[in-house]
Image (cartoon, rainbow, N blue to C red; front, top):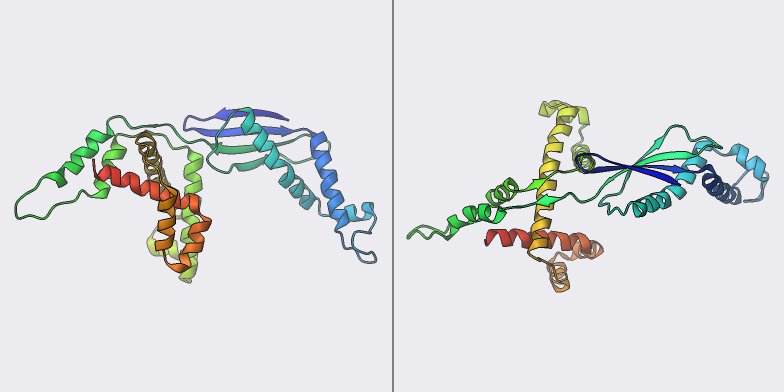
Length: 275
């Protein structure tokens, strides 16, 4: 297997992976053997039809898809080990050209590592916001610092370049969420766009801006938590699960890692409030 790597200025990583035909053919033979074993052809018992006859009936596109499904994960894993990568997302796969018999197969895997985050001087800026709540004026109620002002101060001192592939993934998630909500309202996408006065391109651009801001905040908070050694104990996770509604507990237990991330983020925000 041959691989090359390309990194763009924003941190997106593109791996070009070439799989020799010998490896493809070996996996293709295994896939075909399995399909023959499970084939149901008229006049033959399951798995007893002649191999040549079964292969003639098989959809070639389906065979190629199954071969790809079998060889891509291993090839991708081998490539990220070769370059010592630590991707934080599932790759976007693009097959290059037509997949021909007797020829090497090529595909591109686009992914990203966590972006570098610099937070020089953020504490001083956040303290300017939180200091307002520490000024006691007789007869006036204590004014708590607004979270959006704290976040603004944090991000004003954050140097983070978000890889486009991460932004695109988040935009796709937001669009999918919006489409589900539109369907529940009994509307089509065209009707929704017409009612909001937006085009599909404008909606995607709007979500791209939101996605980039949300991701910058997420990585900035992760950096603060790392520097300040903010962690979440197992007991905190269990307490949150037990305090949740009964119908939500099973889902929370199944997503403990996500829950821990949310709790760590909340503790980090509390740390910033108290600066």
